[in-house]
Image (cartoon, rainbow, N blue to C red; front, top):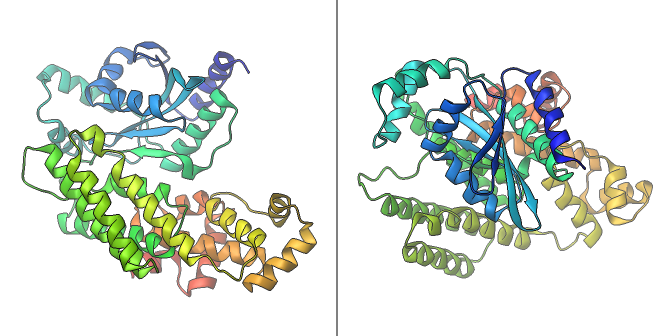
Length: 399
């Protein structure tokens, strides 16, 4: 596979959807090339807002793609070309906004970077360049990012494999602070519900939630202390949710204490960064294990786990049968005998449960949620949702 030829074609294709540019950095973070007319300024902004360093740190350790948010709401996404385990090049698309932003919103976002040494002229140029940054739905950017990863590696990934490295977005003048706190609370409830149910397909919801809130608003200039406080609070909430999900108090509290001790022992923000995701994943997997139905055969449990991990895809009984080495006829009968539901109904109910979490914990539109769960249309999604819950998606969100 010729990566450079693939990337030339990819760059041309996504340009059909608007002014969405591609960038290439070497393993040392040097910009090799881009097709952006504002290359010099936007590459500087990418660096100044900390996105380049976060991308390089992530790319040297991981192989999956990442989206990189800023407090302004401006977002880039990156995928990585590796030589063995070593980073060879990082490829970036963006920037984009997920929604229209006002200049007041940009000014508020800039307050997050209050200690940056920028001139008035630079800030004014930023405002002018931002006017040309396209607005793109998050689901579309995510799918472009999966395509980018495929062009570089030939590997198919699911939306849940994407990682979001977000920074808190500045409050706009017309935003109600009380509503923002309510949104944080709803997001928190969605995350805790995923712990209670041992939902392994949690990555997108967790990443989105981390972009909604910067954590506990401790009044301090000590960023390390603030991060530690936020992680400790998060660990305490997750620990209790895990107990409600069936994990024994002894195991849950011991595990929570270990993560809290690891948090307090961290010396730098780099040491802290992986801990909340690691802790959340650990608790969810333990709850999932203790909630696994002992009456299910290994093959049917494998199918159930596959469904829960691939809710963003169209799932067919034939694919599940191939996964466990059964004929489709035998698998469908065995699945219904053990779970009480057909493969289609089980998948439908699982997708609706995920939709309920997204409706509660994110600002995604009903259209975006329908697309992210591979429902053909918004109308079809709404009809199925109402069949299962007795409410339309909007009624459920508002209630």
